[in-house]
Structure formats: structure tokens, C-alpha cells
Image (tube, rainbow, N blue to C red):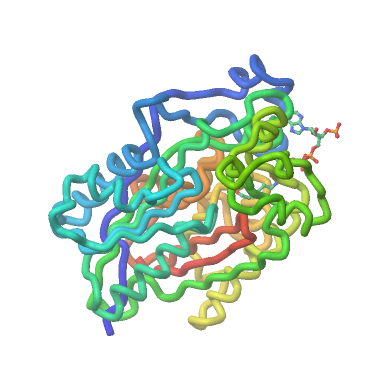
Length: 355
Ligand code: UT7
């Protein structure tokens, strides 16, 4: 069986730069607080009513397919990871197929809902498809438009300041080169704390999950009929359709799971942390990445961080960072590249790639 490799990478971030000082104007926050706690200086916001996760993804894809030496028609499967899709349904995979003008090919499109771990989950799926010979040019994208759904009042500051928009894409192909390509992927989840980092509304939960987590929040359900229960007035009045996060809880688990899942991947292929040439972690928080770097004993130039410029772009963060690292010549032939992510679900995972 051939290994699968990343044959082409691309990314796109919107032009609009939003600095911490810009956010200071609309909510009670400060550049100092944001930089100290997260490392973020600025992030990008998509152009309202023009750009969407799908259109941003298409921009990243154009670059990735050119670098992979293929045309749109050669793509034989699409995997799209996002937590901020254009529509509730259908997913962005088919929208991207249409945006790329390749509906006539009839290829399959799969949507991945694994938040910050979406790209690694998608990479693992692509890896299996390519290794078994089922597909030869899998298009994997992570794209997010957080700006559309954040709470820009002080109430939402702990979440809103972190997130940004952008897209990254990769083409996964088979390689005949011995020992090259994706060596392993490790995927995990634990749904115990699903609501600790979540956007619960609108949804079909009927308030059930809130009760299960011991937080009885009145969503106004007893007063509404079936057809009105998806979005209630109470949700609007109380701002209950914004993402919620227990930051410190997430932080503590993240710094535990990142090193754990990286070590698991290394053990599987018989390598050690000293063998890693470049770590591209999901850009959750610069403090998390620095913690992981210390645990692995890596130098500054062995970890790619760009959260300072783009914020946390969830499913898009790894492909954006990996593309940047590659463009900067930091990912070279023969290098051992490690990807790792942790996020909502909770889900987490890692990948080791011999470039
Ligand atoms: O990518 C998905 C995975 N997500 C993560 O990995 C995120 C992990 N968590 C974190 O990165 C951090 O927990 C945050 C950056 C989200 C928050 O940092 P923290 O040091 O854990 O702050 P905190 O939530 O404990 O809040 C400390 C204080 C609070 O005020 P009091 O109660 O001490 O008076 C907050 O109200 O900071 C306040 N605060 C803010 N102040 C200024 C919260 N957000 C802000 C803000 N500006 N934006």
C-alpha cells in the first residue's frame, strides 16, 4: 500500500485586519490583557455578505491545487472541516464543489464537524482513502468565519477576542517513496464536557443538554410549539446563540492532551521528540503552544506560531500555519513534521508526516 502525502498547500485570510485596539472600542477589554493571556495582536475578519467559509476555502484551494500540479477536475473527493458553515445544512463540501465549478464530476463531499481538530480528523480520513487506493487527489480544507457569530458586547469578550477568520487547503495524494508521507494519525474524543466549549443554539436539544450539565437555563421552551422551538425569543433576548467557553477548564485539558497525543504518535512509529523537525500546533493560545514546546524540548524555530496575526481560526489554523511554515522554507524534504490539535467536543489528535 502506498503512503499518502500532502502534495500541495494553500491558505487565504481576508484583507480586513482587526487589532486588539479595534476591539477595545466596542467592549471592555485591552490590548495588554489579550496579548498577555493569548499572544494575539490582531485577527482577520471576512468581508460581510461577500465572503463566506466556502468562498475563502476556494481561494485557498486554487493555490493548493496549483502547487500539487493538478486541476480542479482532478480532485476526486472533498473533505471540508468547519464549525462555522455557510448553512446549517447542506454542508460546505457541496458548496465548495459548486464554487469550484466541478459539480459535473459528481465526486463525493464529506463535511467534518470536529472544530479545532477538524483538519487532523480530515487528514486521517484522507490518509485512509488514499492508502487503500480509493482516491488519488483528495482535497482537504479547513475554513472558518467566526466574525459573523460572535458576541461583540463585553459579555462575550472572553470568547470573541480569541477567534479570527481564514481558510487553509491541502491536496492529499499517494506517494511511492518509501518512508515518506503521513506516517500516522491519532484521533481521540471525550464527550463528557461537550458543553464546556460549545455553541448550543440554535439546535434540536430542547434544553436537554443544559439540564444534563447541571445548568438549568431557561430557553423559553415550555412556551413554544415544535415549529418555533429551534430559535426562541429567549435566545435572542439573552444572547444564548453565541459560543460559550470555560476557558481555564479548556486550557488545563489542552496542555495535558497536546503532549500526550504527540507522544502517542511518536511511540507508534518508533520515533522520539528529538526527531521532530517542525511542530505545527493548532493555534488555540500562544501560551498553550509555548507550554507544549517546553514539554517537548523544542527550539523556537521548531514551532510555527501565527496566532499573533490571525487569532484562533479553529479548523483552518493548522493548514494556514503549515502552509506558512512551508512557504518560509521551514518544512523541507525529509523533515519530520508533527501536527496536533485539541478543541471542542472535546476532540484531539495528532499526525506525523515525513516530508
Ligand atoms: O481552540 C479551542 C480551544 N480553546 C482553548 O484552548 C482556549 C483555552 N483557554 C484560554 O485560552 C484562556 O482560558 C482564555 C484566554 C480564554 C482566558 O484566559 P484566562 O486567563 O483563563 O482568563 P479567565 O477566563 O480566568 O478570566 C480572568 C479575568 C476575568 O475577570 P475576573 O473575574 O478575574 O474579574 C474575566 O472576566 O479576565 C476577565 N476577562 C477579560 N478581561 C479583559 C475575560 N476576557 C477578557 C477580555 N478582556 N477579553
